[in-house]
Length: 420
Picture (cartoon, rainbow, N blue to C red):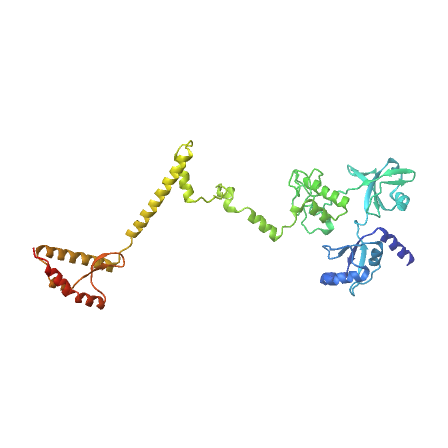
């Protein structure tokens, strides 16, 4: 028990990334508020909490004391819990190269460098034909996120450099980013990219990459997809990120498109004005400035004259234009008065008045007018509501009787004149 506590104390000094898991997937059924309260009850609120695809929680602690509290935890919200160190985020890897190290085994190098924080040693082998040949390059794993500049191997000081691993490629579907054990794809040949076809049974003479569709095998380092994955590994290693975080940082446009982004991209280029679809180039719209009619007419009058006209000539032209505009307005008003539509009743009264006027005029030429001439449905001379002047039939009895009362006087008046 004492050795276990001592190991936890050592791990807590450098470990800051932990994996918290609950069996039977019970963590998926808990609300985020309950999880936050449970974490605060164990060792306080961590620096950051992220949920992994597996359903487990990735915790980043603030201190060694908080790391130790989580590593010693046995239950979480009345459920058994397991807290382990993250496999890669709590450490860093470097490479040392020296010919003298060819004489030492991996176990001997690990024993000699363990006091300097080295937790794992792996020699790099190079394949020649069908055999693997050991090289002078050794990969060292340190129990810290900061890579030391040098290490002392016996009496030799070796300079360390950051180790950037090769991209992980699945041997089943030939895709990058996962291994064969976690693959959900179909079996694909590494040489000809055929589906449901083993690489060892391939008889095709033509090479075809399953990732970039170019004439090379899927394990070629000349593949553009392999170079892209290499950049992801470089960013992940230098910034101590996960694979998906580094990929999102380098290539944000290749992430899954949300509904809002898809809607923006679909509305950014309307198809009605797309030259490739309609074959019509639509010119941009230009906003025209409003111009008053009077100003426009004055400009037209002034442009007809030479540009060398004197100010007196210009003022005379303007006054002439104003007088002309006033006359035009008066003529327009008179035209509107003349064009008033005549009603049927007014037209009938006008025609009747004209006919009676002609009758009385013809009678006056032959003889003198008598009382009986006026009593034959006597007319009234007046003005209608539309300005039509003539003899009209009285509509109101008061007017008619007053007119009959004046008839004797009119008879005496006409009889007093000598007859010709």
